[in-house]
Image (cartoon, rainbow, N blue to C red; front, side, top):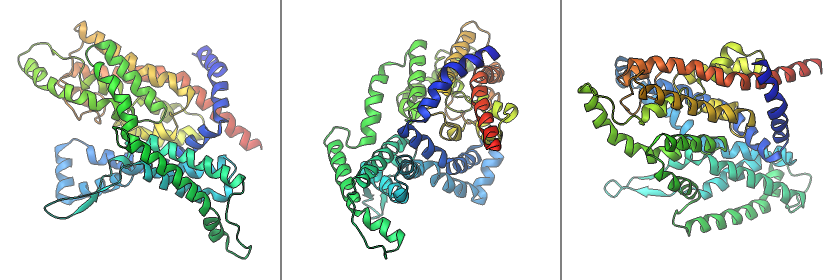
Length: 429
């Protein structure tokens, strides 16, 4: 294992160090990490809202706590793209040497992102009530938010470098001067993003977010019938996550209708004592996402129990409770996994290994296939397997946790060693 860690450090660490010096990637990763507090709050209250234990759900309903918890989720996870647009724009200003205009860059990035999404109001005919469609403000809109933050912060930096600003007397307060002097830059950025909005509106997709997701989803519609196709879908989802696109949201709309049609046949077969006819159901998808996308439950366990650096010790304490309930946005955006070359291999490899092994054990009759009930992915390992109608599947989920730990171990140790060296360097500085 030490030899493998050494190989990873020699091959992937130089790549990671080189990428970390890239200003665009630095802006994205820094922006993502700065939203960790919001992400963690959303993760905690998502867990509290979705614990599937009837006495608990009854308590939430009777006391009104369920509505309160959902309210926190609505303004954290469901508005993640909003926070991300500002954070990347703010961080981008710092990275591109435009520190005087960090707040302006953040707000203009948020403004530009809002221009690109279909935030149109809809009025109900009967009641006259108007409301906004907030579906594009959460994780679905993160990729567009990242792009808006990068483009605006870079464009603003170029404009200020060329001194295309409104000059004000020194007697004007700094905050007022910053806002007014960048007004011309704001006009230029507005024109750029209005043109982009108009161009996307001329397409069949109507807006930037739907364009990106539809283009990605269309080729996936033929990949739903067999194990190789299932693996390809997992691979695509993981790669999308790596680049900041919500992989699950991209592929699941294609898979859900198919999986729903499986439940009746699978339930009837189980009741009749027959083999599950549709093995490639959401039960295998949940296995591939044990602990969250990338089957990162092993990673959070390693951080909690094996981290030597203070950075990952602290992070493990925050993320392990979330990972048990398959909420891993804190890991993806906070570690981060996105655009992290050291994490790319286990993030892709682990789900594929688990699905292939699980499928093989089902085919050889060693474990019973899950029924494929939707909505159990947030339950802890073993419990979700039992609720899928298969004790043996639940036991295999525990084995899968161990496999996840083994796969992530050398890559995590590489990250942990790097963090430990940095901390020791800071102490000696």
